[in-house]
Length: 349
Image 1 (cartoon, rainbow, N blue to C red):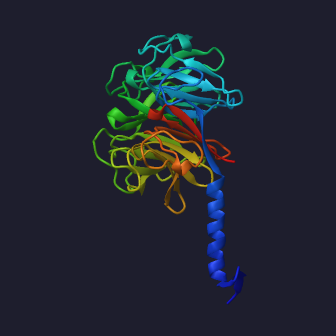
Image 2: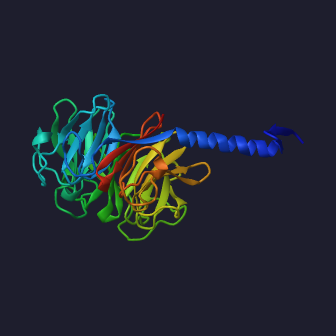
Image 3: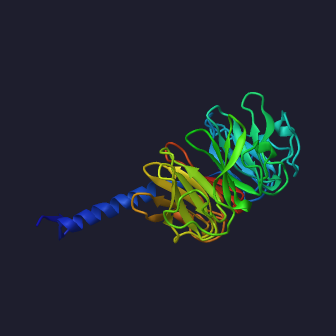
């Protein structure tokens, strides 16, 4: 057995491995830092304020985009200058404007947003029950799904004539089709942007959870809250009801439960590097990391207490019902700390 001297004591090789591991872990945690990108704790849409931010994403231009749901706008921040601008919405609650400047249209509580491969912006206008698109070049806004009235119908036809009910989360699949969490209808709808046709992809409207290994066709999916697609094309679903995380394998065409414990009202999800998922664990006031290889859940930000900060140590930073999380290609985590009215960034020093 190998022995090493540490100070005046002799330790075995196995103990030394534990000491080295503990040192590496403490060094890694010490290197992590959380900071406020924008927000002073009060609601607003100024250069220094946000108003209940939800979904957020890094755009193809490297800027940060997010939804201010109580400000009824979609906003952009240049991460180099920290200057902000409004991309869509007048700030007035409503549902108006087609084929006009996006900043001249009224929107109503935008929840989440994504970019397509061409750089066009899409967002779920939740209270208006529609999905809207902002053209990259012309900066005009159009409705691409939903009639503006809550309900269900229109599968197999044009998405603009179909009805949605409180769409929350959107994501593009590997084929460029837009998946929509139609939470009020207990379904995930799928929109082919080339044809404009919409269909139900997941769920049958029943208020039940899918069974393990169930086939996608005609299987219940109660209240899908947030969705994400990883680089391999697998679809991950967060369900606030039941605090569950599911994966849909498109090759097998089946549901699989990954976790049903360890979360408290999760409402956001983002695929991170090296087989990880980051979860906005809203009612736990924290961001959790799920390891797809081990199934382990680890808190990476938030003290677990409802509050506001301070910046610095991510595990000592209180949060207030975070709803949005996004991880960029470098592993930097962006957090919409919703009711603290801040957007935070978690990165290595």
